[in-house]
Length: 356
Image (cartoon, rainbow, N blue to C red; front, side):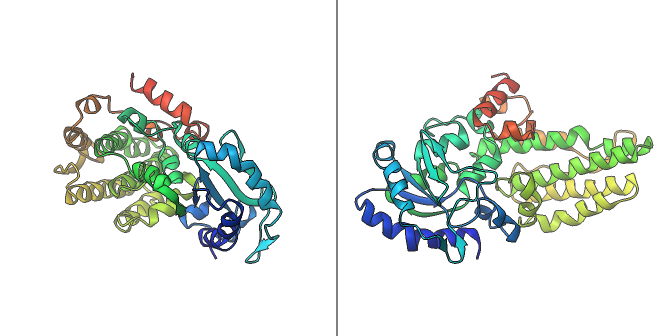
């Protein structure tokens, strides 16, 4: 059994009946979101060595959290079974400890946690409210954080507050999405000729490294064109493989990564760029006439990224957003984990990078 189903049954069989007795009139939401391979359906036997098992988050408004959370947490420890469906109910503490703070409480004895809505939202976005969410706010939100908040499962949602938050963050607004597409083409533009140039100069290792970077950029564009948030690196390839566009792109990427000669490497990548462009145009997403050819007078195959960028930028309705430098959102600017996991810093950094 995978973790989401285990947690769903833990809530239905154990937590919900107990909570209806311990606090019968307490409105709450119950879910499993935030972190964990099971949120994406990627958990396997190895996943069970840490933070995996019967676990549920209960969400309360701030007043109810202050009044009830600590008491209920302690009460549940007295009634929770040692195991549930063959899995230990105790907290598997590596590397994440049980929740503890002004907006969350948890215990080592079991996998039940209590959170405020505002606290969970702040943990993912650095914001305690989604009112008046601006394009620059969106550009400072890493996709892996947005995915962690919108993946997983909701088991109960009195008043619909949790699902409303998840719906708001389900995907980027159209203009932000188009800006990210433009910036992703710009990333490809910056290095696509270097696969050949490094190889031509005798630096085959350098050519391979650049090719691998470009393969990742192609995959990131695949997530964008499919309007799916990309997971963090451990599950990036697994998540990509499940996209409809992956079937078209994977043969080209495999060829590029396995190629012994820089010419074959560059040709495979050019085929991947062309497949991206054709997919983009077929879906009427800032369509443009794609052309693959040599890089000026040099024998390195590239695609007309300037036209791709211009098409995406011209499709943006918000003049303030279309006027931004074509640099990118936070996870197009950096892949540094300590930054991308600090929502306060990500929003500050993207404002500085974009001159805002």
